[in-house]
Amino acid sequence: MPSAICVNLPENSYEIAIAPKSIEELGAKMQSLNLGKKALVVSNPVVYRRYGDRATASLTAAGFEVSQCILMAGEQYKTLKSVQKVYDVALDNQLERSSTIIALGGGVIGDMTGFAAATWLRGINFVQVPTSLLAMVDASIGGKTGVNHPKGKNLIGAFYQPKFVLIDPEVLQTLPAREFRAGMAEVIKYGVIWDAELFARMEEAKRLDQLRYVDKELLQDIITRSCQSKADVVEKDEKEANLRAILNYGHTIGHAVESLTRYKVTNHGEAVAIGMVAASRLAIALGLWDEESSARQYALIEKADLPTKLPGGLDIEQIIQKLQTDKKVKDGQVRFVLPTEIGSATISDRVTADLIHEVLPQMQ
Image (cartoon, rainbow, N blue to C red; front, side, top):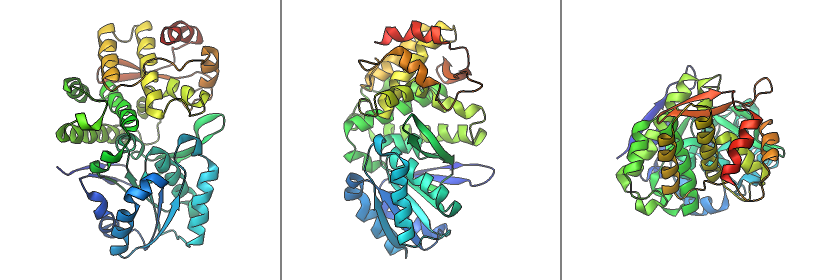
């Protein structure tokens, strides 16, 4: 069943459209929004080979002049050097301020494309067509764009909202199982911090580790409720002045793990799962939530076949040092998102280095 969610913002509100085979509607949708005449599709080789022709045909049929920029997939390529390639193609094809850059791919492509759109000619139209579960439920919504610095993740970026987000759940049929599990980590996150009903729905499912075990109704519910959760939070705090930081649940330790392993050992969702387990244990140590809730979260992470232990060889002192480069550091103090009950979380500056030294060895 098609569904639509509106992200209501003081400026730049937009729609998230969720419908099967909606890639064929991309051109018509952009035409209805008056998004110029030139369109640049940014993708990676695998995604473009599968869906690029369909997206391009839809755009061409709607009267757009279409160009393409193919970037390498993977977090290690989420750099200013990759964004430079987008600029080069934009210049070669004379993209104007009325033109549109389209992200066709997962979260890495979406983040880089959004940053290129935010900075080319000081900002041109931007459309998200996410093709991974993680991008559908998280990365494509909310306007966070950017690239990594060699010493930290997502340290270079901008808040820049898309004109709309087009989600076609059918493209998940070609998504590798590991990437599907990575997306489930973000879905579990929403259940813990915001949507207790979504959490309960997932507890009822027999398996969450592969798409073929998730029926279409549950998948639609997972995508729609996750998108609604993100929209709810972003509407209340677009630029992360306070509340929006709860969307980083699991990401503080998770980003440190990704960065220290040079993005080659865990993918983003796997790192977030590890981070959620760590945050859960920290919350128990601080008396913020209970063992039963922690066990329910742990069981759901295991049901999605996501990791619950730190990768081998990681030094806890290195993790603590890496945390100091986290974007949520305020006045030198790392702020952690910690759960208080299923469906609710808080932002805490009570997590000390000593507490981390006490908790993380349990995850080695």
